[in-house]
Length: 449
Image 1 (cartoon, rainbow, N blue to C red):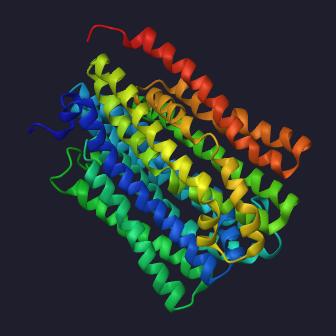
Image 2 (cartoon, rainbow, N blue to C red):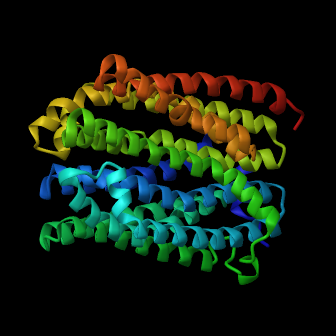
Image 3 (tube, rainbow, N blue to C red):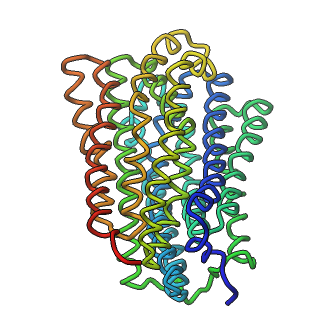
C-alpha cells in the first residue's frame, strides 16, 4: 500500500495539522448549520411561525435515529484512527465493514418503529394544538430519509478518521446546498408547504449519500467496501458499541431534552415559547460551528497519536484545541450578546416571538466562552478509546445537570428559571470535565514517547 495520508496525523506540526483538520470541518458544519438556519427562515417566512415549532417537535425523533449512524461512525472512527496509527490496516477494514452493517440494521429498524408509532410520538414531543398537523406532515416524510442521513453521518466521520477533511467537508456541503435549492423550488415556487420542506431535506441527504459511496469506491479512500468485512465480529461490534454509545447517549439526551423543554415551554407560554426555543436551538447549531469544527478536527489527531504512543503530541493538541476553540467561542458570545433581536427577526415577523426571544437567547448562551474545554475534554476520552469517562463527561452537561435544573429552577423563577438552567449546567459540566482532563494528562500522558 502506498504511504497513506493518515500518516500525516503523526508527523505534521500540531497547530498546522489542527487548522488543516478543523477548517474543512468548520466549513462543513457552517454550511450545514446555515442550511438548517435558512431552512428555518424559509419555513418561518413562507409558511408561518407555527411551522418552525412543528419542525422543532420532529427534531428529537429524527436526531435520535440519525444519531445511531453518527454514533456507529464516531465509535468505529476512533478504532480506525488508532488502527491506522498502529499500522493495523486489517482491523481498520473490518471495522469499516461492520459499521456499514450496523448502520443499516439499526436505522431501518428504528425508522420503521418511529413511523408505526407516529400518532403517539408527535404529541409526546410537544406536537399539540395547532402544531400537530404540520408536525405530522413533516415527520412522516423525514422519517423515510433518516436512515440515509445516518449513513451520511457515519461515512463522514470515517472519511475524517482517514485524514481526509476536505472530502468530509464536501460530504456536508452537498446536502446543505441541495436542501436550500430544493427548499426554494418546493416551498417558494411549487408551494408544497411543510411537505416541500421535508422532501427538500430528504432529497439532499440522498445526493450526499451518493457522493460518499463514490468516495469509498474510488481511489481516494484507504478503506474499501468489501462484502467479507460486512460480517459482524463480536470484538469489533463491542468496541464500536462501547465508544459509539457515548455519542448515542449524548444525542438521546438531546432528544429527551427537546421533549422535556418543548412540553415545559408549552405549559408556560404555548406555541410562542416553543418557537423561541426553536430559534435559540438553530442558533446553537449555527453560532458554535467553529468550536464544533475544532472538536471534530481534534478527534482524529488525538486518536492517531495516542495509537502511535506519541503522548507529547496528544498533550499539545489538547491544549492547542482548547485555546483556539475558547477564542472563537468568545467571539461568538460577543455577537450573540449584542445582536439577538436582529437574529430573531431573520426567522419571523411574529412580534410576540420577537419580544421574548432575544433575552432568552442571551441567557442560553451566557457560558459559551468556557464551553470549549468541556467539548474538547469529553471528546479526548472518546478519541483515545476510554468509553466510560467519555460517556460520563458527555452526559454531565444535559443529563446530569441541565435536566434536574430545568425542574428545580422554574419552581423559584418560573419560565426564567428554565432559561438560566442552560448556563448553570454549562459551568458545572466544564468544572467537572476540567478536573478529569487534568487528572488524565497527569497520570497517563506524561510518559516517554
